[in-house]
Image 1 (tube, rainbow, N blue to C red):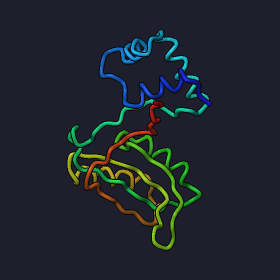
Image 2: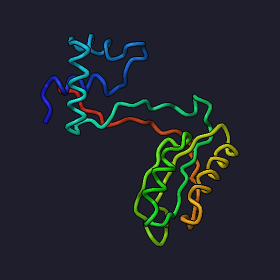
Image 3: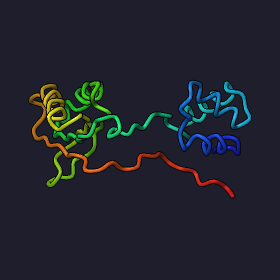
Image 4: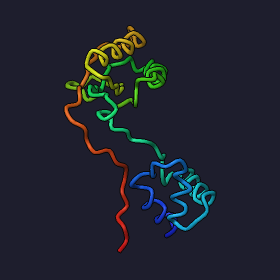
Length: 160
């Protein structure tokens, strides 16, 4: 599925891009290749589904967002897709997704993560989501983070 060069690229990038003005140029230099060749191979890996994305994973606590809550909603199945798109587009929602309910204990099928400087800010954002969902939402809750977990994607084990 991937050749040795693809594996080398993935292993080099899985720890993150360098925080420099031209991170792909620096990574290409480290890998001994041209920046355009690196970008082409990354696009190919993405188009084949080998990698999904390259994205920042900020530490919300260090950014001053010390109150973090996963809002959970029981949304009408016929309206969840359209409403989920609207909720996911809100500038303060970092991720939003639909999941199956686990009845009778877990009635929620829409999840949206929000961050704020304090709980009042998170609650205000949750109220904005609730206003959009309106009568399509039957039950809601929020699960506040108590600690930050290490955020990493899949890691390839280095050959050796």
